Length: 392
Image 1 (cartoon, rainbow, N blue to C red):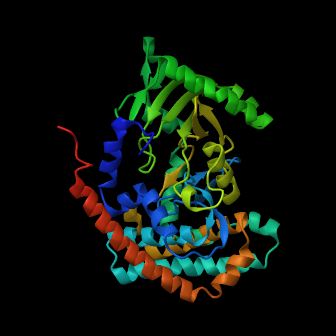
Image 2: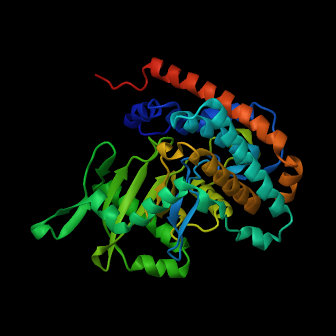
Image 3: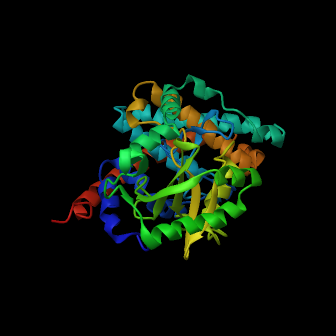
């Protein structure tokens, strides 16, 4: 928790205490240390680092099409490929339990995830690299949770974000600004707001010329501090509200503090010179298409990632994974992880190690169940510790 906003640390623990799955989301450093203590394959690729069932979602591609892919890369780093699969396995078991599945059903979902990963990796091992880079995952057409996320993303237009995060002010309500809902959202003014806006100068200078021109058509209107996610609670996260062609043309940029990956102490060359750059480049390496405004900057000595906020983004809910949906979604997770790893690593080496994938799938199914059990015990310990209780 070193370096985080002190007043938000208790909030982070409170959010982690909501459920075992919520604890897993907020405890990436704990799992990183646990994985590092276990035997590893030695086969390194770029990993997401926080691969769990809710860190895949829908978002808008640069051409406006809605895509579904991994969408959280705060912990991304070059590391053993199986670390992503192990974290996904644990999350599938925990999410399965929360959605009403029995242990057998949740473990079968893990095996389906790994089987789809291994099968697609074998295909990638025989494909031209350029075809791997632009490969479309079609299995998601069969998964209802993916459709639910895409429908949410379709509705998550900038105008919706405008109504949700801002309010009219001034004469005749002609102007808008962020509406406060502390501690989750609070306006930033004065010197701190100026520092946030100054950070965009260095960011803009590194954008492609066409992106620089597009951003130049918008003017900043207001700045806010926003609490996001679970693992990121306590880090500094700013939102800047811009207007373009009038008040009905909003643009929201998120300036999100990035620190060293939780895996950095356990891998070679894990410490990055700039963690915003680490996240942006890791995301571009693994995603088929990324946010056109994705880049990085700094405010003082702190490092930040810059991206659009809520531009046609949508994620699944745990309740979406009831019944047959868990296995179908697990297969999508496996294929998207395979594509990300193959884009950033060596598909032939990974495929050769996995073979038909059956033994690996069985091993990860057992690991997922055992780590889910451990997570539940850690969650109970957090609740007993009192760290998540509000101060009187």
